[in-house]
Length: 486
Image (tube, rainbow, N blue to C red; front, side, top):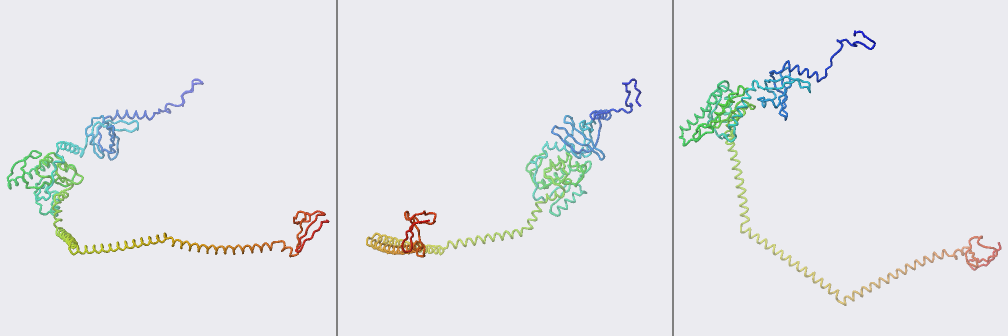
């Protein structure tokens, strides 16, 4: 209950203290949470996997750090002097140091990153990238120093473990594609501590073996410097190439081929080197330094034996190819022979004589046509002149005019007679019609015609006459005069 009122205007406490509440805005609550997090937690180290990495044009990097049960937002500002910034990528396992705070606009907590360390494979990846950049700057990866492989190698050096799967794959492919290829094995470990030094020693051992045998077979005339500084005699080596290989594995398993000592040994090798380490997706430092990189050990063996294998197929198909080529040559020779025979037939004197005789016949036929055509033209011209002369002759002209006049007279006479008969018939018909329509015909049938004597006008009604008017009545025979009484 509220406390009692002291006056009529004092209503006291309407609500008890336990019934009152403090209402915060979203901004106020967010600020309090932010202060609490920054005060209670502050700077921490946290580990997890990077996901949803997004780099802005401003240089800031936003990403999410997650594990199997939770995730949190992280931001790395461009002003922070953080190393390994460029190695951040989705799926990367990292160890981050930063300050926990709240991004007030979205009301979510986040970690402002101050330091980045890669864990596990990430640390090896950093070492890999550093060595890669160092050796690339020194020119060990330069394309212009890459040497082509010999087309038909007879002896190769193999640097690998004698107990690994890679040597079995290489031997299987070589035996199938080029059984005559001789392989000199320089055994070494390809994994674990000290493996890199053994690989480098094996590469140098094969180089020494090749040149020792070459010097024994032929003394050298002079010396030239290798790119790495090792003197090499200018003579053919006893090895055509060196294959450095091993099977697949994790980055830690393949790390021996990412060591600088191996890269230097490959770079200083006077014999072309083929690197085939791991699977297709695996790339090592030795792949970049070697003259040729193969995806797998089997692929490397196929590359080495490609020309020999192709030559074997070519030799196997050579008889068929030669037979086809010989048939083609015979066909072309037969066509050439037929062509020359036709040309010889065309150039034979009898052929030329026949052509001349045919041309003479054509000229003779053309001459006859011209003569006949000229005769016809002359005959037509004479006929035209004769006709014109006849038209110009006076006697003939008078005769023609007289005949024409006689014809016209006869036609005029006939036309006149025809017209006279025609008009005579029309006149008779008209007269007959007039007689039939004349008053005499009416009077002959017993009718009479009454006229006014003074005017001669025919009277047709009794109202047209007056008393005492003299009338004249015409009959078929004679006339009768009368006077009107009523």
